[in-house]
Length: 227
Image 1 (cartoon, helix red, strand yellow):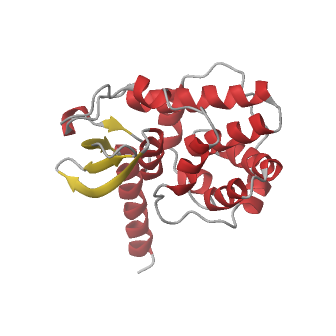
Image 2: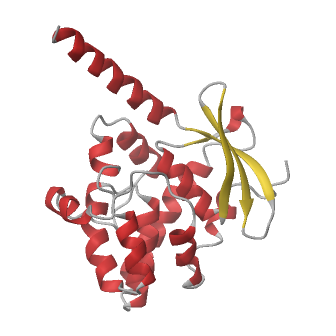
């Protein structure tokens, strides 16, 4: 496998060098189920605003959210990713700021939204706030890339959701050419970078499958109780 420098430095080196990077977030593949109409519902359900300057253990925070029974309600259902992409294409920076704030209060571990919000804040001159979200993006991405080297199933990058896999691909400026679930419920992805370089990387979405198993068990129990 030829993927030199795989690790935190690789992804973090691409952060916010220019507005063109934002178009990578918009243009790359995204998993299904991301709703362009979600910002209103997210705003209604959002908790109190978070202090983005406070110290945080990104790996622990991601683990905490990945183990939550309400993860889908907080971080998947009504995700405004498509709406944010449309706002970015229109250079509607104030719209991005308004849409992303309640979502990140609900789901502070969403790498993509931190990235888009950081760009928008920078574009309107709110540099200090932008840098906070750059720091969160770096911390979240780095916590995934420090969990392994992604070169084999045994050293797969540990993610808490499928959308984290795609966020990492965007950070690597890569797209998935093919995807296969291999032994141990490890995601094997053949990828291609923007420069044409190809590689195979591995993700371990264990928290995702743990949530699925629990949901199925609860549904089966409810079905049995109703008989």
